[in-house]
Length: 527
Image (cartoon, rainbow, N blue to C red; front, top):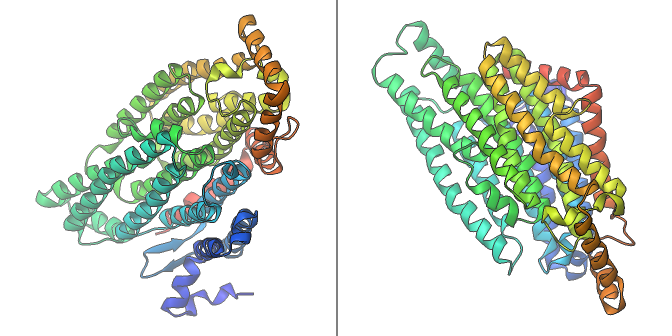
């Protein structure tokens, strides 16, 4: 076993490789999975699926081995510390749950499996690189790496026009976001002469101490650079008005990939923004908190209004994610020890309640023959009681009902904002939360209290499908999706149970996770 106590005696390459070891493990396995395409028998079996799960396990093992250490590699471009550990675990869970959901689901489509799982692993590794990046160039490259995998996976269903259209829109808008990021980086470098985030922080601190922060080109270049950079990151965080890609991409992508974007990409984008905000934005260059204040309100309000008008479950969850991004942003606005740790807690809770909801959507697609219309869920609570009950629990958590992780996440970020005197912002957020409960409960009502006419139509359609050759076709399609005799396949069931466990655990015993978040924030400030 590697002797961690001798980290600082290692040479440049050894120390650099150690700092990216969790990501490197994922990348190596991604290439191994991709290599299976050369062997037809191996590529058509479940080998890519199992290898992908194993890679997540090995990466998690390396993270636990290195936990408690601070390792900077490649001239400080990559920093591994407790902040990275917290987010790595969240991202690995997002990838793990996505892979579990993909078992049997993706087999129904005539697409190559090794490339699919390999792209997920590459996406996971790029997210991990992003949250540990400490250099503007590394931040940009990691975001581009992550985005490319997301573009391909969004349009992975060949021949599906909706999937192709979603990928094209995502790509076009993503290129604009990339341009904002690169131009923002140029202006920040022009103002400070540094690309390393810590060096930029020290430069701004020294200039501020000398009273020169408001002088001439330094302030102008920094302000322009930070605004442009914020626009690029707001696109990845799905903040209004930079959210335009979200509904179409979520709707057109395969549902497991929709979950991957909703959880993995969001936690990675918020994590790097939190790192940059605490080091650079939190100076009196411009009043960025007012800008974030406005973005949070617009995101919450627009996301909730659009979700109420949605009849497609994936689009509804897409607009919900925009509103959730507004809630998460409140923790960053609140700032300080409690605000940042509350943000991390909310991000971790968001992974499980969102992934759980999308896992149920996958199950509903299986049961209802790929229907995403909320009206088709009429009476499903009686046909599939466990799945419907789990969906209701995840929706209540997203709404912020007590004894769920969603409630505790909102409690922590709202409390931090109140301590920082953002009372009006919290009031607007509470009104939005009450407003949002309407469309979450609307789905629950549809599952358990359907109109009599809808229930009769749903029952008659079910009888017709069970007769003759139609029943045989239904059974064949159900087997293709891993639904045998009304049961969910093992991978999907494991994903649902994991999400239920953590959503409930974080709601009842939040102190375990908030303490972990506190320690992570302490390492973020050890600069």
